[in-house]
Length: 266
Image (cartoon, rainbow, N blue to C red; front, side, top):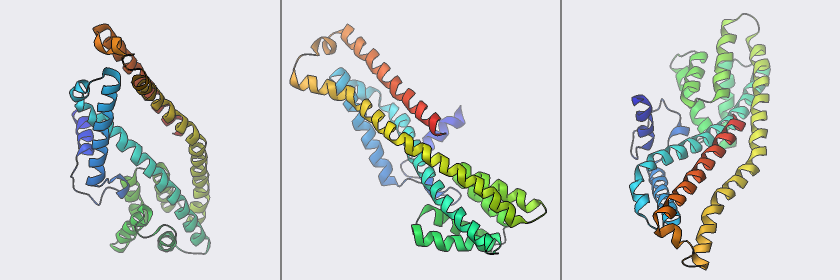
């Protein structure tokens, strides 16, 4: 329980040191973190005003900002992981081409870096990660160790699978390059399938986001067009209890939809 809480607090820190052992896709700049917190505060106060016509409940529930920030962090890193997976797919294609031309895995990685740099730029996540791999190889680490470190930093399924394939291939006898090429072909199909699923769900996710906004927009519209319409709900204890129940159902629906879409993707 304590470790779980510390993990959330670590994500919430505005200023923290960046470790080279953590992939850059998990790093969020201090300025961007501050903007996320400010946006969360604004949303919390807006919801408080819509459902209670006062900002006091929003101020009382400010600790929920940590939970909101954690959800945003997960959404941001999930999107970055997916983008890295697409870049990693291109890297695998480059490695496969180099292996077919007779390159060793080490030299194929160097060729992949050159190609990825021309496609995505040297400041892209994939180029930074390949650069770390090449640095480890230059320091005497084996190619399996270098890719295993890559998988540990990124925590992306396809990278982890490739690292395991590489380790098994190096330990087994036979044509290592052929084994890697055959295995990565299956891995590339998996990445393509996930990309198709995400593309299919993107329109549904957009519709869900519109539906999330609709209740608040309707309440705001009625409040502006018909002043006093919600006074029985805002001014009485029973009305506030009803609004609290509605807010609870609303938040539960948002949570449930997020869980459903996350399950569909993964």
